Length: 98
Image 1: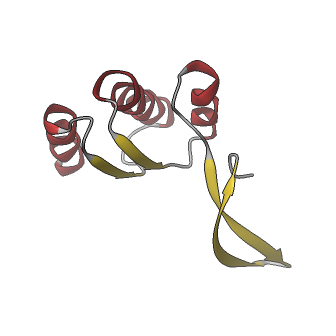
Image 2: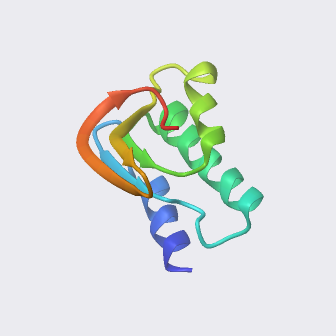
């Protein structure tokens, strides 16, 4: 409930001068509900509000957004796999994650 209240506040009050940071919107819902919610938020922020937004998500489907909207890009944090461990490199790379 808190996540939705905070998201609604962002969507109602953000402007084109805002920096919006969103992390895993919709994570507390079913997969399709969460994806729909995340997509709608990203679309609204990009097309209507036009706020500079960093949108962290595990919904791979959202990597399609740059094909459908201007001003949207995918980036990911680089990581290296070593057997069953992951080393996070803390460098931003172009494109969606794998």
